[in-house]
Picture 1 (cartoon, rainbow over the protein chains, first blue to last red):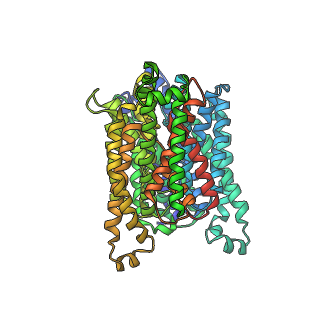
Picture 2 (spheres, rainbow over the protein chains, first blue to last red):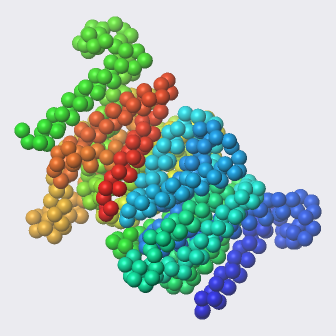
Picture 3 (cartoon, chains in turn red, blue):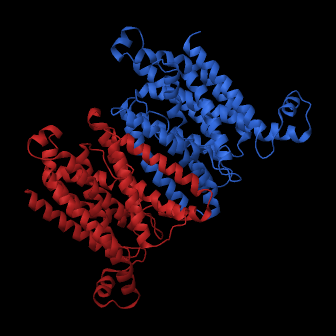
Length: 319
Length: 320
């Protein structure tokens, strides 16, 4: 199977998942009803499909692509197969910044939330990269510090605590598309930078010295890559809250299908990210009817075993 | 006098001075003369009450919990050969939080206490970490993965509860000494029972740090040693967590500071325990006083200070 055909198959699979995402939900609607509602926008079913399920699916597509690509970028830039925006504390940085904004009484709203999340993600990813080679440990340290700090502060303030406990569980439910107007361009900018960086990632993967000898500029690539990661993760977290493990698992799945070429991994990740996220979301809707499980929890259930399997099979020196 | 002995003496003196300051100051200051009178059993009732019921147990608990965590951290760091190999990082802390949340929010009231739930959760996660990750550096990685997952489980549990219930349970996300004085006796017994074991197996670990082959030729069984050391470390962590909940970073910072103070490279669980005791007492005093009349949980204080320390540690050493 060529890489192109594989990518086309993934897109097809994504299409199937989108259909499932539209058809399955808390309310049991038959296929006919969903199809009719899609065409006519009429009645209660039309309301459910157009006002709830379609926005939710669009969000899943945007956020999944962002986190998948961010994960692939991070793994390539750090040459660490366990790198993930969640594990490296980038999502925690975004979440902590938003909650601190509430505690400090900054204006609450979509745009301030987006800006705070971007600042938090940027600071956390810069910090984790600056701390050196042991990224997973640095990320764990940053996450632990931020969660401890925020938990301690929010325990004193019931309003902030209430805000916080819902904010820290990433979910696609009950979100609106309002913020996407502002977050969308940010995501797009991140993706564009990722594509630009993707061309030199293969050269960088050989090592900084060999990469430089082949005409690449590792430091500049890393800076741009970092910018893209911060933009993608910050915007994704502002949209739906922190979601871990997606950025970890998706690039590995991509590598299994298409091999070690970084540009292909990025492309596959951009398709597989939404696919996995949407599938996890649908799973969360089915698993706990009539309620549902937040997508971040489902991702954790899927991702933690993947992480442990990777940590067990890889040579420790590589991690 | 040898340097470690000097360090131990200084640490004991520091702990004593801190304890006296902690007893004597606060919303109701006690003059030193009254304090002495109360100690020999002849003070007024108010002073006696504050001493025996409020400040005494709290200070005792801070010292015991700090000591248990410090010793546990020394064992963990030596086994994993990593300055970050502490019970926090191998998932014990998040497991403990999950256990406490399950005990408070999911199980019917009174089945098990939050403290027992915390210990059970911490043990379960540590067991999974050791079984899937072994005892080397992989243990840390697996622990971090589990911790990341459990953090989202904890958040999930909190979103399913009413706000008052959630806020009560949320205290167990970070360790706290507020109103936990009644746990003093149990924690003290466990800690004092395990400390000699920690000291004994700490010596075996020193030999292991020369490398497994050399240790084997000296008659030490590496895997056996490591497993027992981890078991003792987990027991000590359990003694601390049952009383105070998951207090972060003490187990991480204490062994490092102990190493620097004694200038001895080998793990010294006892010195590390003393450092931990002093650290936690100081952190708790700060946590009680920094935002008076609000008392922030000591775990938030250690998390904040420990995080800064950890970042400094990571900056100085590029390879951990």
